[in-house]
Length: 202
Image 1: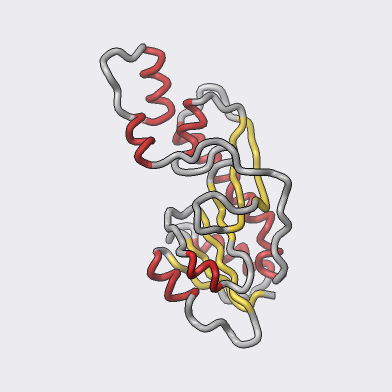
Image 2: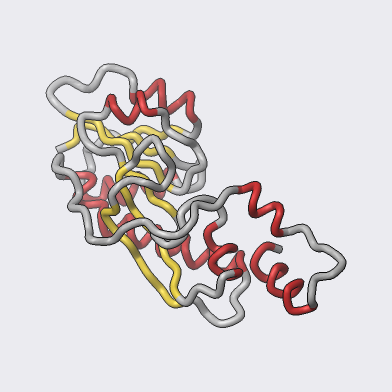
């Protein structure tokens, strides 16, 4: 069993995620990191005697350095609020713009490249007609928490890597800069395009 878990996540999420893990193993030490400096300081410290350390990133924009990932005795995992078909930033917005019928959340092995490691879990759902990007983001966030709950027992109690599933990343990796560019309107856009962009990008 892992001797401790490092959670790289936000202040609001941290206590809820820690509670889920400790429901399966109450004595499990869970340490919180919210930025790159904190995750480096925590993960590069000497491992606890006689045990391993596991790094879990959840809904974070922090890019974990390769030196940190390599220091882990087993795989580190990232929980991504978007499906394997929409890697990168602002996945919900681009899914709406492209007319995706399904969306979801992904858990995968962390690698130096963003949204590139083997996938260990996906939670899919249908995209409602006419949904706005903030509502789809909320649906993905709920799916992500459900996925975390599903994998939490293994993460808290088993040193073995999570089994990889037969799902691959696909689609183009989007960026925050592309999201911002799609918010810009030009004079010759059709009314339908303006409405779609407003629904997808705000």
